[in-house]
Image 1 (cartoon, rainbow, N blue to C red):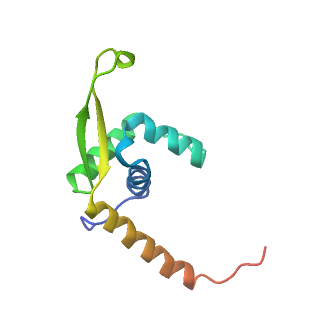
Image 2: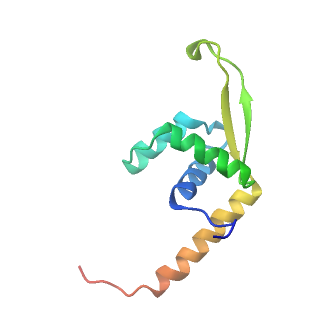
Length: 107
């Protein structure tokens, strides 16, 4: 499997990080997926995927300030990189090529 290859879940998480911009963190990602796609995802799976995307250079992360709601703990935020944006654009182009080849179905 190519290092460029993204699985469906990685693509989903990367897309949501791009949508959330500088406000992308684990729980926010879970909430967007639930609200927009009516899909339940595991927070641990989201975090594992975020770290894998970071290892691939598609996102970066930083720790931000502690809040009283979090018991003084800091939160890790993720942001899509230029390489991540390019990867999503490449995936979209590939999908469009295939969609154009798909015959029209009559319902």
